[in-house]
Structure formats: structure tokens, C-alpha cells
Amino acid sequence: MSAKGEVRFQVGGQAYTLHYTINALAALEELLDCSVAALLETFREPARQRIKTLRSVFRAGLLEHHGEIDDVDAGKLMDALGLEGVSVLIGQGLEAAFGRERQPDGSPTAGNAGPLAAPRGPAPKAG
Image (tube, rainbow, N blue to C red):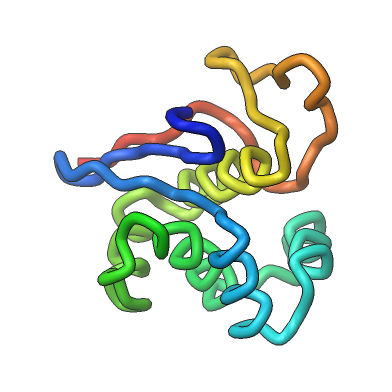
């Protein structure tokens, strides 16, 4: 975890930052035509998750710092990280966006114990 609400990771020696800002979340709601709350519900039921949706959520988190990344490039990053790694990063990013930051050992910081459904763990490194 880096600056408030940001999750940093590397792929192939290149640094990237996920940051689910209000603008990123609003763009995601518009793109998917559903609320963030409804989207979070799909993360609780893996059978309802779609790769296209996961890619859209991942890309929305990249918008703030990497607005030039399109769907194809986001998909390539996901290939490098693996679906589980991407899910972990998205989970960490969304938790940070909603004030549920975690300590380096993965435990919630004081007052931020509410869980989100995406898997948690250390940020993966690829490449």
C-alpha cells in the first residue's frame, strides 16, 4: 500500500498504481450500468463474475495514474498477474477506496475491519 487509497504493483519491471477515486468509480458505474454496491455483490459470488467485468474494474483503478491504458493493455497486465493476483489487487484497492486499508501483514488497520469480498493477500509481482 502506498499513498492513501493507492495500491502499487509491478509487471515486467514497470510500476503501476491502482487508485479507485470517486471519478474512477463513477466511470465504472456508467460503463457497467450498475452501482458500485451491486458490483461488489458480484465479487461475493464467483459464479456471477465475468472476465470482462473484472477487466473493467481493473482498468477503472488504473485511470487516475495510467489513463492511456486501454482494455487490451489492461487485459495484458491481467494475463501477466493472473486472475487471482488481479482479484487481490482489486480487493486491496477497493478496500482502500472505502477506508479499509490494511497493514503490511494483511490485517485491517484500526477501525477498518469491514470486509469486502475480493480475495486479500500480498500484492503480486509479475515479470
